[in-house]
Image (cartoon, rainbow, N blue to C red; front, side, top):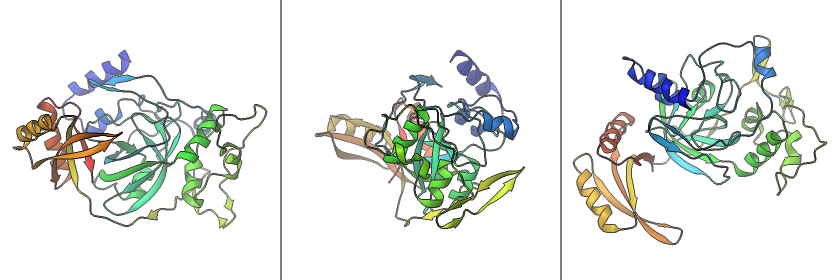
Length: 323
């Protein structure tokens, strides 16, 4: 962790660095290249949650969960990280459908929907990040291309954990089974490879010690050959992108949540010079909370600007949400 924070401090002192080059990717190891053979030899099954950690003054507590839905702004890794070691121990491969999340267990399967164009894909979480305050997920280059966010660099997204499938690959990884590539099969067929059926039980962690699972085979499915391409002698399936209905959605800053309506109203009044501020009562576990929200905001850039002002004003828990 000391190395991580020292690295963060060094990067923050450099002038002219882009966001992609520092805050969004502090958890990634040094840049480098790695042979395909070595890369695949390193892909052993490994389940990891991790201990609480702090980056750039913000603390995060990873936890194993199978109920998770989130909206916000996603970014993508950007060039230069191919071959870098991820927090799960794998090597980042820009040609795979993977993602980084700050707290979800690794591996887990998540459906990511671009709320701007309706494109939706399944990614496998195998890394930590992003650590820019206004971002909820980093996706690989291939995932970004399929979501239509390479050009803009960001997208309004909805993140939905897939519970049964995530339990299954967690059980497989706990047993040393490689889970790399299952997300490609999920995108192609809508279900896990048949070799993972034994892990889809209600008690996902009780797996016989003498069983073994072969890595996913991509050459064909019951519906026919899997479309794909060869790269340096390796077969890479082409993910199938689904199209979701495009609904009206806007960007807001959620500045805080209070048990007291008076406290929420006071904060809303104080922040009203930044953007339109409102207090929204919500029911949470049988009690009423009062959320202070600013917006709607017209663009990601505008949201970033307002978020930075709110953070500078002392609201350290402020986040960007999409509704």
